[in-house]
Length: 165
Image: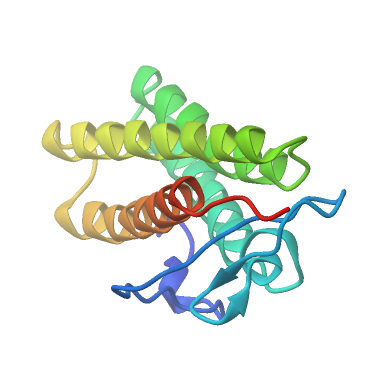
């Protein structure tokens, strides 16, 4: 209803593993990065940028959801909240691509994680207040949970890995 689920699109699927190593490289050449054997550029900085694609696809779903809430449900306050936080995730991921330092990279993605968590709250509130059916809720909730898991993995791994010289 609000667009395709992230997992239904032709995106690389995230898999949770017990061992995940991440370091980071910005445009100035600070460090190299790896997630399960894939270059970090494929996840955050490159052609197959999973978190970028998924956060943008989620932002589109969020825009459609807000439109649905305004037009079909005549709900204006919560729709603005979910629109603001749901679209901020992708914007912060994009900002992280041009972070000035490793700390800036971590900060941008940490804020994106906070926005994702807030979006999850608004989606839950919309469901509990009967603005979203269970099917609508489950579809959007799975996507935001996937983004949260992805962002948590990136932030934790980046923080725990030593910077390379």
